[in-house]
Amino acid sequence: MISDSIKSLIIDEQSRQAGLFVEHVDLDEYLDKLEARAEILADSAEGRCRGVVAFYCNDHATRQAYITLVLVDPRDRGMGIGRSLVGDVLELAKQRGFASCRLEVTKRNEAARAMYDSLGFRLVEDRQDRQLMEIGL
Image 1: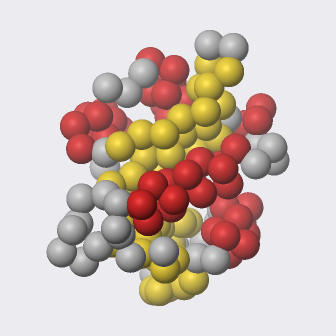
Image 2: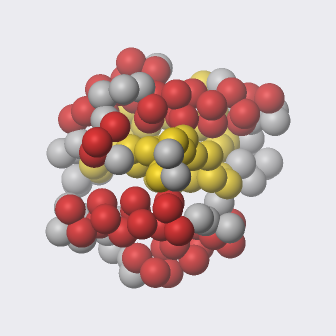
């Protein structure tokens, strides 16, 4: 179950980005999908979610994990929370026998792209407004 604190963080970010954070899908449907199928790791302090990552470790045929969402509260950005959460997902996926992990990032999100580059993610496919990135585990 996704906590109200996590939902609030995602909804607030969607509003802050004028609907561009979660694109091309209804936000409520996306939250329902996350709740039903994704695994969630979160960093919380003082009763609020500071950061969250949602991911899938369910493609056992390709042994490829997929990070679908990384979000850090604007008040807590630059503190390494996103890096730590993504690192935790990569370690967990590796322990489960997955060989790689992919994610998509918008080209306009330079900070996230820089973080993924520094973690070792490499460009797999350059799309119109997004980049598909992958890291071997």
